[in-house]
Amino acid sequence: NAGVTQTPKFQVLKTGQSMTLQCAQDMNHEYMSWYRQDPGMGLRLIHYSVGAGITDQGEVPNGYNVSRSTTEDFPLRLLSAAPSQTSVYFCASSGPGQVGRVAFFGQGTRLTVV
Amino acid sequence: AQSVTQLGSHVSVSEGALVLLRCNYSSSVPPYLFWYVQYPNQGLQLLLKYTSAATLVKGINGFEAEFKKSETSFHLTKPSAHMSDAAEYFCAVSGGSGYSTLTFGKGTMLLVSP
Image 1 (spheres, chains in turn purple, cyan):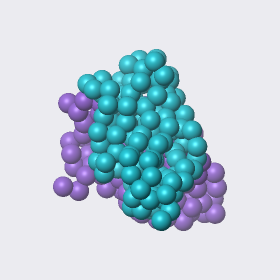
Image 2 (cartoon, helix red, strand yellow):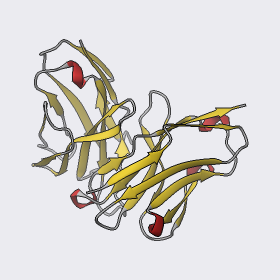
Image 3 (cartoon, one colour):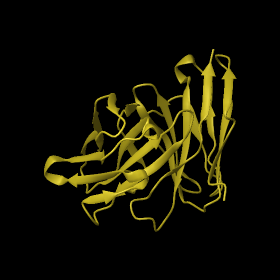
């Protein structure tokens, strides 16, 4: 059971480039989220989804786009990369029936924007 | 709205000493509370969770936490630190967005010396 898989693990972008961070889960979880982790800031919520076709903004959504066409996949798009988006990005999923909705995290994508 | 405050960005202990990592929360709804651990260059791993069943929660690797509603606290403890406990620890609360997302504290780095 793979759990939550993020690709790529590392990426370097130039300012203004666009890219998509991939996230897939094989646990049939309905809830998926994207967080960014910056030193001394903890993890902050970017976007989340409560099911296929339903997404909403989190705390820091600007510059990012998401869609959820299937239960398994929740890609995060950077529209025009900026140095302020240099960060480690984590995707998480959680499922129905789990009291407290325990979130399972991917291994992260380390993104550098130059 | 929820928030989490972790007191101390770094905590240093000697091997065999008591570990105490502090977490205070605020929540407008009955909260679910979590402690996650992150080892270097890894994703987040669940240590334990509080979901209103029992106020004293036992987790993996000998960690436990006590939910104190009157103090809005959920401190993490371990009686005897091991070198392998050196990592960053995050306290998180769930309650908003239908309990589908987490609000994290800024993290506490635990340093263990021989």
